[in-house]
Amino acid sequence: MRGCGGRLVWLLVLSLAWLEPALGGEDGEVEEEDEDEDEVLSDELEEEDDVLVLHEHNFARALSEHRLLLVEFYAPWCGHCQRLAPAFAEAATVLRNESSPAWLGKVDATEQMALANEFNITSYPTLKLFRDGNRTHPVVYTGRLDTEGIVRWLRRRAGPTATLLQDPDTADAFISSQDLVVVGFFKDLGGEAAQVFYEVASEVVDLPFGVAEAAELFQAYGLSADTVVLFKKFDEGRTDFPVDPARGLDAAELTQLLRIHSLELVMEFTKETFEQIFGAKIPHHMLLFLNKSSSAQLALQDGFRAAADGFRGEVLFVVVDVAGLGATVLSFFGMTPADAPTLRLVKMENNRKYQMEQDDFSGTAIRTFVQAVLDGKVKPRLLSAEPPEDWDTRPVKVLVGKTFEQVAFDETKNVFVKFYAPWCSHCQEMAAAWEELGERYKDHEDIIIAELDATANELENITIHGFPTLHYFPAGPGRKMVEYKSTRDLETFSKFLENGGTLPEEPPAVPETPENSTGREEPSLLGAAESRDEL
Image (cartoon, rainbow, N blue to C red; front, top):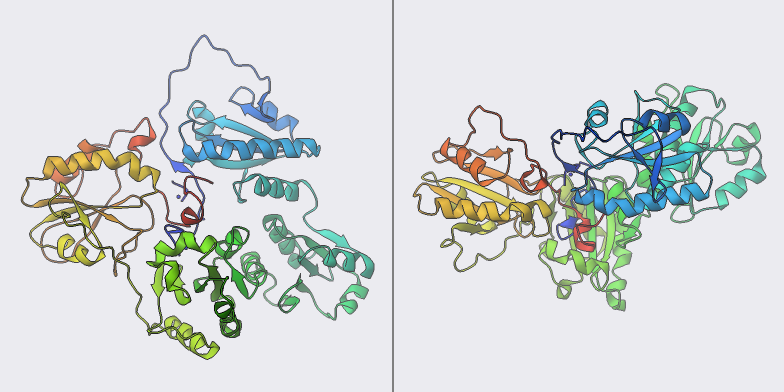
């Protein structure tokens, strides 16, 4: 999202995990407010909880006094900003206590319109790093929105991006220091490949990076040409990525290879591994649901692991304990703990889920099933809740997967559908307006107002990427669908319907508060594992 919205990403109750978690901000246009003409702001730098409070009068001074300045542009009403604030302040304190050259500041973008416009702030929170007083080319923050993520990201930019390893003893000590270590072996540290390596090191802040140029280190580690090596204390112990002499190094490709190979061949779904599992952006996840308290079910991991090796990078194999954190994602798959042990494959691009006709936990059977899904030979299993008894008597009709087609594509009706998630704050904010819309049109023969819980129902040809999503299905042949993207209030909805699924040419009113915003929340497995309202 960067709207209540992808950083791409099974869930919605991880519904809010297996969808591209994405932590992000809230979209919103900000109206310029009249300033108090009697208030005169100076260029003095004031602080709140070790965070500089910035405005147009002291911004230049802050840049001149601090070599590295990470600035959060926020809106007071933004829920994501409010939840980020304690972590942001804690990170500022940690860095201050380390005497780091990196400082943190914040700008209320709803008040400081000049700064918001200068730096093209269109969603909240937006974080940008200003280096050496340069105001024209700030760096967009790419780290995690928590204390540790902010601190790590800034430490990497404040210090050397990679440690120079000069002899076998220092190299051995560095490689042994952590479970995962990346070392670039380059015969010329000033060359193009080495520079790309440094670029990757500056972004992949959760891994320590070292560089080596000495011939004795090439010999010690059995190398004869430029190579990036990932050392790890699990699985095969080491993965080499030779530098192609013709192509050189590609930063995006190397970053993805490091993400993929820094994962264990078979991951366990826990709070500690959550970021790794979804951050690697592997296109498919193969899941083994089991109860770890059962020794018989634990033994099923052997066949699961045997199947995993041939799919590294294409399919991530994950063990989910239904008696642990995995319990929070079961509803996303239409499952209960009693369904374990069982297998599911999730296609991350569209969150489609695939299931064996009958579970077979042998390595051969799992390999065959996964390959069949990749080859397009298996149809997805679509979830559908049961329709409430009164689903079609309410002003807002309650649709489910199995009733959607007959209602939405009724050629005699114009159907306006809200696709929502129960945990979505934007959906909650517009709920009253949608109910009022249903009341207004309940007696219209050719207009239906409806809603569908997209966390419990899936549709074959419609993929929902954010919440709420509003689609209008006009009467007539052709299975047409129009996405509504304007202001979410009763009167604008009505204009849209009365105008046959379009809005009049006049520009829509700009909302002053998030209640009528056009922000959306993206589905993510995170919501099931922990409240979706938390960063």
